[in-house]
Length: 346
Image (tube, rainbow, N blue to C red; front, side, top):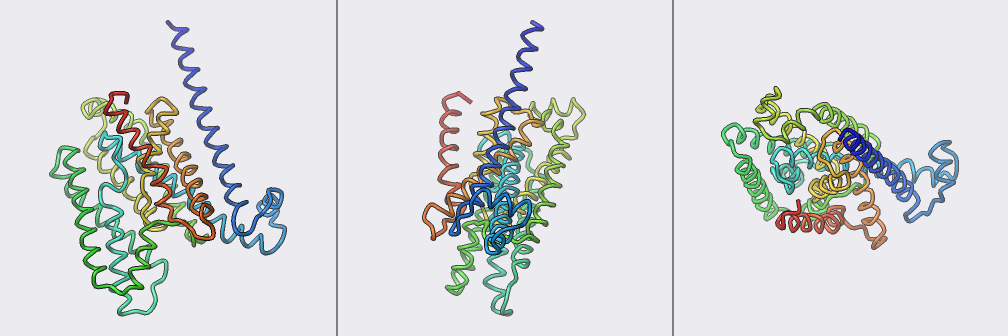
């Protein structure tokens, strides 16, 4: 019996290591692939010289350091954060189809951005990117505030999920009302942002969202033991000394902050937060947070780097929205997951 348990532990450890190494290799490969491919082709030796020595053709150096690397960082960090936010939401609701946007965070961000783009432009002639970021953050925090208020009086997780969806519908309805009275140019700008994109990312943006997502990642990792207890049920978590009420607030706060950060810098991006955690848990064959958390982050980074590559190159020079590509690859995963869950295989 002891030998069997030891073999099982070794097998699991080997699987976890293989998944993590595989994700790291895929992350490195997609990073090089994204730098290499574009309107200007850059060979792998040139990429190495540009990255490590900052030597080479000045045009290529500028393309790599000012255009492609910031975009790659955005796809990796924000994609990883979005997958992590999805894992937290699924843990919070105990539901594999819960995602970071079901609580109306993206709709709240879109609403405030619409207000800034449609209303503010009537009084000022220019809106900076930082104003857009602040607007998206404010919208995310407002939506999160309503959900937290609802959480005080709603005990059932399913009803809280419904409340979040209703908040999302209300925000979307108000946004559509504003668009009705907007100028055509404002509608085009809002539509472009609402589809999601990593393009146009600057190094100042990378610094800000890396700090925000990094702090949240550390916070989530420190909560791995309470999350593991919470997965076993609220009663079990309470018996293990977890303050369930406070834990819920922290969980939803972290998830909302990550999702709001993603929405602020890249716009709403669909299906990453639902599909990636499920795929990661399927590969690991476990739901242990201490393993799933880093793998979710790496998986989200790899998934978004791949989708961003497809968005840039599939119909070049026309670029697809990142949300369109993530939906193409993420939605079938969700449908397959629902079918397996209905058939009792999950």
